[in-house]
Figure 1 (cartoon, helix red, strand yellow):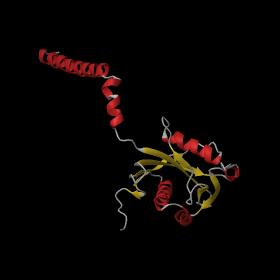
Figure 2 (cartoon, rainbow, N blue to C red; figure 1 turned 30 degrees about the vertical axis):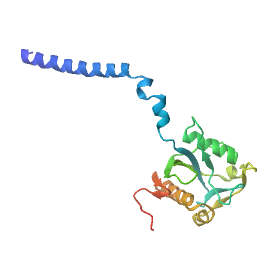
Figure 3 (cartoon, rainbow, N blue to C red; figure 1 turned 135 degrees about the vertical axis):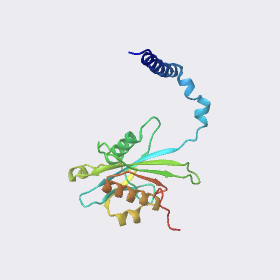
Figure 4 (tube, rainbow, N blue to C red; figure 1 turned 90 degrees about the vertical axis):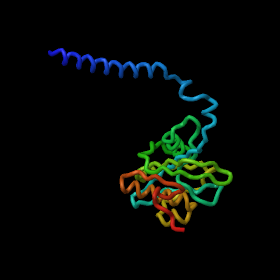
Length: 197
């Protein structure tokens, strides 16, 4: 090995050591208090989050539930609780609303909903519940104080029975399920697709 080659090797070794030393120092100095103070964390805007599960039958219809407390129908789902992941919230809501222990499938839509009077902005996670079997459908047990009935609905019926925003979200989720993708929505509209005024 030449003297010059030896010097290059030492420089490379020193450079590698310096990089690892930096990483080590950085890791040692990082702590929970460096991530953010409690005061800063409290100042970050809070978004409500909810999770919905889209179940279909063999004909491609969507399972909707008729609440006892409002006129419009809903897909199974609801608010995600504190310290609960959206996926766990979706599974809990299906268990509470349908009496079924079914893990949600893949995420198919994420809908940002801007604030309106009386409601903060929110993120709605929509999961594919898959094709429900006849046996699963027969086992549905509704909490009658909350849900009056359920039905398999065509896309047209989804638009008739649900609020326009939620109907758009469900239709977009169905398209994402069919395409095998995930859709990003804002107020029920695909991002980058402007609604016709």
